[in-house]
Image (cartoon, rainbow over all chains, first blue to last red; front, side, top):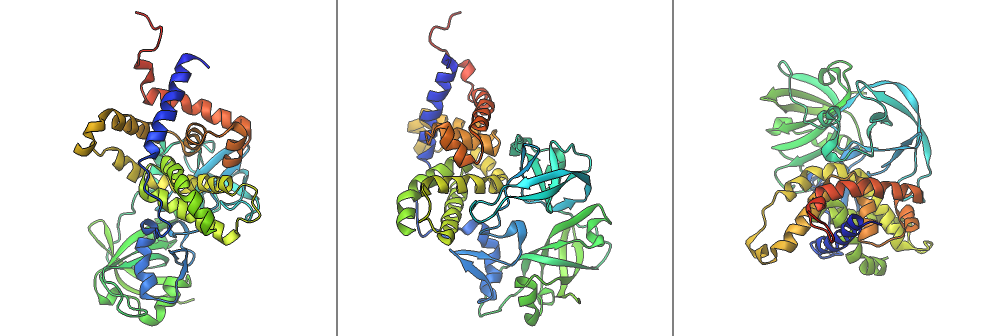
Length: 262
Length: 162
């Protein structure tokens, strides 16, 4: 250990300890507002349908947007190289060919999820040692910090802008919905609201450019509210929705939401 | 479980805060870990506290990327008047916070486990789900970055001349 290393160690021990003092006071009653906030309106509005666990409100199959246990799998290993999820993507690129197989070494609760093998694909235009696709997720080499994330991956996280010509009907899956007005009774859900729609509809994915996209949509009036009898299926049972969208500036506005025909 | 959470919660929260850099995400992480532990139970675990750290590190890997923007925003906050009396300490903490931001999640976790939690290579390997050699590799890659970020090269050292 040379002098600069000693100095660095002293600084690290001193300042990490000082920084830790800025941590909040532990509160056993804390109820996780940040990630469940946007889900709460639907969950409360359709009371009795949501799964409530430890204060976190989870919608069905909401993928990267859910609050509680959706953080696994969280590591992919390909030939000894570790990759981590690229974060909240707004668009998923189509894969550019099978590269290898990798392994996902179980979830956060390592005792419950056994390691398992997955096929690993290249992402178009990116070297696989930096970025790969596996299991409907984009994975980034663990050597990248958030500040240094490859530009192509940063772009996947940018909001999808609206380029529709007139009103278009698309099919998709609603990840979350949030009404501006608190629900007055079970099943109550009113405009205005916002929702996130995940869709593989070619109208939104520019043909086969993206495997899916997530669009943020605003519902401005009551005609944009899903009929009450369909809300359980659309919000909580993962049923596909048929959504009529149009552009307002660069944003999406929903005109009508219905349960998609099978 | 409630007893375990009560005993370990404060310490785990400080650890989570160093990993994430902000209060809300630290609390989210800790609560999520306790929720998961309550589902599986802790009675069969030899070292529940170490297991909780491992869960927390793993969770942070996947959550870490989505909190980055918030973390960057926090780091731009000016020093408040009330903190002015402790300016050197605040400046040190702020510099450390910014320095940690440049590290990838695994390297950051390794630094916190070694220099805050004081864990050995073997204990860190368990917390990070990797081999002890990987732990040393993570640290050896992280320390030069931290040294650059903290500008330690510019500080006078004992015996330095000219």
